[in-house]
Amino acid sequence: MMALATALVCGGCGDDDSDDTGGDTDTDTDTDTDTDTDADTDTDTDTDIDCTQGEYSGDFEINTQSDVAAFAGYTSISGELYVECPSCTDLNELICLTSVGEGLGICYNTVLTNLDGLGNLTSVGGNGMTIGGNDTLTNLDGLSSLTSVGGSLWIGDNNTLTNLDGLGGITSVSGSLVIKENLALPDCEVCDLLDQLTSTPTDIYVHTNLSDSCTPVPANCP
Image (cartoon, rainbow, N blue to C red; front, top):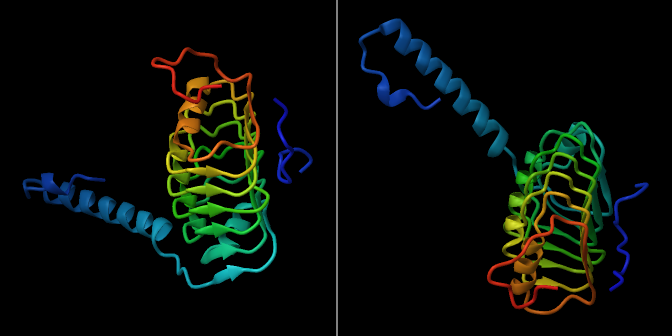
């Protein structure tokens, strides 16, 4: 089956506190200091973002880590959000985002290993979602809150992606489903995704992933 093209297809485009018993004062003090430093760092990264920016009007493109910081605090975007950032190591500052109005593209991010900053995203509309050409992306767990994709869902050329567990909440894809050329992704992962959808995508196009035999065979395995 031939897949419909989406507008966003990639292309061109310390824990030792309980052990402190006081026998060695200097050692205990050092350990506490290290633990406090780590705790403060984690808190700053994950929770010290003020989610009061509301909706971003229009499209926004992320090409640098500073662009990620610039978008911090927004809870939605009316247009498209496109992430093509070869130097970005994380998207943590996007944690406030809950919806994308037109389309989401995550492409050619060569050192990005996860999408954990998108943990509150529940819907993508309009032009669908594209995830492609991300050489070090191993999972999509950061998308675990996502329930619907308006338009097509396109996942391709992610050479280290091994599963689609992070898409376990999706029940609706209103356009095509295209999953191709993810060399470490078993085809059975696609079958599981199809089984959870409440309606059938307009086209299903699956090829050149890691071939395997599903046991038992899911009902909707292409």
